[in-house]
Image 1 (tube, rainbow, N blue to C red):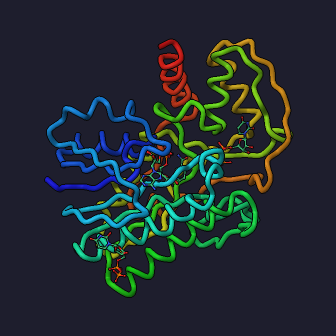
Image 2 (image 1 turned 90 degrees about the vertical axis):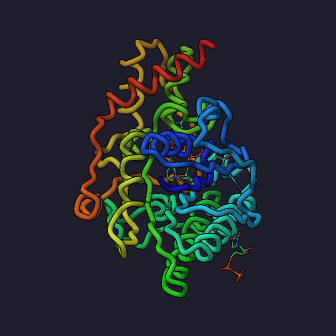
Length: 312
Ligand code: NAD
Ligand code: UDP
Ligand code: UDP
C-alpha cells in the first residue's frame, strides 16, 4: 500500500484517479484549491479511511510525506484557464516546481498531466510525441499551452539535474461523468444543450476535428504510465485516435439524446486548433495501453450523468 498525493484531485480526471487508486488499495491525499474542482466529485470518498482531503493551492510550498505524486492541478477548459491567465501560468509552472521539489526531497516518482495543447495548432497530423508543436506564445491559449510546455521542461530538468523519476503524459481531449457542466468544453456543452433542447453551438464551420477519449481509458493509461518501467519518462500521448469533426459530434449527441435541438454557428475562437489526433504507438509499446471505449458508448454514459445532475 502506497500513500499517494493527487494534486487537482477534486477535479474531473483527479476524482476518477482517486477512485482508481483507492480501489487498487492505496491511501490517497487529495490536494485541491477548489478553483474548478467540486466537492460533489469526491463526496463519496469523504468517509473512506484511506482518503484525506487537503485544501491547498499548489503555487505555495507543501511539506508532506508521501510515496508518489500525480500532478493534475490546473484548470483545463479554455473558459476556466482564460478567466485568470496569470494564475493559470503560476499554477502550471510554480505548481510544478513545488511538486517537483517535494518529489526531489522524498526521492519519489512524479507524474505530470501534460496536454496535447503542447502541439498547439499542429502542422503535422496525426501528432507523434516527437512533434515540437506550433503554439502562439501571445494568444489567449498561451497561458495554458506555454505553462504546460514550461512544466514539461521543468520535469525533464529535475530528472536530468536531480535524478527525479518523472513520467510525463500528454493527454488528448478526455470526456465523461464529472465534467464541469459549465466549463464550455464541447462535449459538456453539446450534451447539456441537447438535454435542455437549446441550440447546439458550433464554433466556426464545425469541420475542425478532435479525438475524444473516455475517462476510464485515460485513467487506465495514467496508472499504467506511473507504474511503467524505471527510466521510462515519456512524454507519452494518451488519447483515442478516433477523429471526429464537431459537426459529427453534434449529430451523435442529438441522436443519442433524441433531442430536437438545432445547430447554430458562432465565430471560431482565436487560435482554435483545426485538427488533433494522437499517434499512440509509444503507449501501446511501452504501456501495453490502448483505448477500449468507443465514442458512442462513452457518450451514452456521459449523457446519463448530465441527465442525472440536470434533473436534481
Ligand atoms: P479540472 O479543472 O476538472 O481539474 C483540475 C483541478 O485542479 C480542479 O479540481 C481545480 O480546483 C484544481 N486546481 C486548479 N488550480 C489549482 C491550484 N493552484 N492548486 C490546487 N488545485 C488547483 O480539469 P481536468 O479535466 O480534470 O484536468 C486535470 C489535468 O489534466 C489538468 O492538469 C489538465 O491540464 C490535464 N488535461 C486534461 C485534459 C482533458 O481533456 N480533461 C486534456 C489535457 C490535459
Ligand atoms: N518544496 C516543497 N515541498 C518540499 C520540498 C520543496 O513545496 O517538500 C518547494 C520549495 O519550497 C521550492 C520548490 O519546491 O520552492 C522547489 O524545490 P527545490 O528543492 O528544487 O528548490 P530550492 O528549495 O532549492 O529552491
Ligand atoms: N466547440 C464548439 N462548440 C462549443 C464548444 C466548443 O464548436 O460549444 C469547439 C471548439 O471551438 C473546438 C472544439 O469544439 O474547436 C473543442 O473545444 P474544447 O474547448 O472542448 O477543447 P479544446 O479546444 O481545448 O481541444
